[in-house]
Length: 349
Ligand code: A3P
Image (cartoon, rainbow, N blue to C red):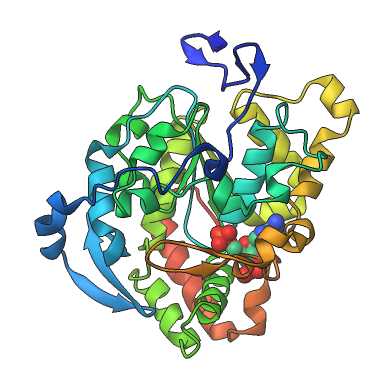
């Protein structure tokens, strides 16, 4: 594989072939992978503070609330369960920040030479973006983390965990892992989360409950400000390792984000690619309209313990929808909490 300055050239070539990340579902055989539930951490988990939040049982591990069903896997991952490889790219987010979109954009960008975005058999035309880019916590939670070792390089993976809960080898100064974080206005994220949970079995969940869980820091993966700040700080001290994106900025100029993303993973678009409008093709392939219309995204479910329908990942895809559901006072209170917590960091959302 091509090697630049001791690092992989992000898997552009393998055995003379152009490659990119391979869709997770195409690369691994989930059923054939041995299951090793991370029970060695059951004592750790049972000693953690617990609470019910938005219909889910959570545990607080190292200052962050995680699903109880994932907690043992999270501990296993945190304690070094994932061995990083040169060329790894990790997407990170709080749920409902635009993760699905980022997965599609990053996958299409990194895989563009092996899978041209306009091709009829592109993986994103037959698979849900979550089947292309694995969420680390899921295989860890079920003891199937060996799947991640089976994934060929360059690996494109995703996490909802805060930076401080990633294996130290992935985040320390010597790590080759490149991380792309996406954040979103918390008011819109809240509304998105509320709709998503209602759509996936919690029909009676009140907006107020979701709202309070975000305000008091007890929602899944929260406190949200600590989640965002952990990634933000590394993006400031080491921008070559961490690219920090905002959902609203991608909405305004998706083509610019695609170029930024390609540059960040050291696969900038060539003049020939620019002339061939590859950037525009990636944007079109990953648009809400296109993804929503794919059969793979209209049917089926995601998840191991908790099941989410594929179609529930695609809703309005706009900025400012909170105004249709929340009062101005609610919006101002949440803004003021977030502003206070981010104060002095330079991060504004
Ligand atoms: P809304 O519920 O506000 O519409 P996540 O992927 O992190 O679960 O986030 C889901 C949110 O991203 C949803 O927001 C969804 O509609 C939006 N989304 C999904 N795909 C998108 C795309 N291709 N373009 C823009 N927004 C997208």
